[in-house]
Image (cartoon, rainbow, N blue to C red):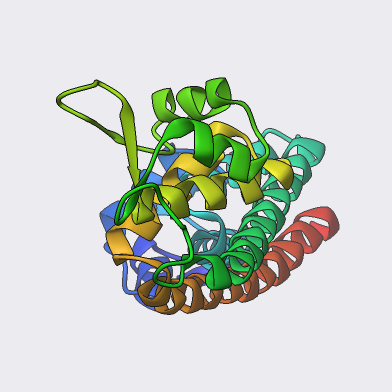
Length: 240
């Protein structure tokens, strides 16, 4: 188009999008408002192309919802809000890394204690709340609280009604204890223990932890790429 104007299809083609997606992004505030031709058609510019490039780059690292929030804040001239949203995402990534590190350390600490026979239960494969609490250096009431939060899931002896902890329950309690000592909340620990159970124990979880690390690294790199494109867009907005 003349005068450096771009059609929706010109923006869409670069990213494999539909022209309707480009229009939707404008309506959602992801792109700045477009001008109109004399005949009423949208007329985008290089600034719009730069905005779309920034948004598409942000999504892999920050997610669609957060990337949308960042772009909307910029287009409300709330640069500080956009930067704060970015900071919060980086803080969440750091928190995820620390959680992974805590889980890895807890698993290393637990490895010797989950050998066959290491639990020394009162009968093969099981222990009860009192001995387990003493072993961990906590009160039985704490184990009952963890049970209510889903961290441990002991069965009940049908004759006595006592809680019976299997070797897997002991493992979960030990892991929960390590994470609590690391400052993690019960609601943060529960999904981690669910991963341990889903993996079938500590050894299979090693692959899941490596995958988790790879995902965090990929997310960090994606955030860097997105930030670079966003910085280019902010600079272009500032220079007009």
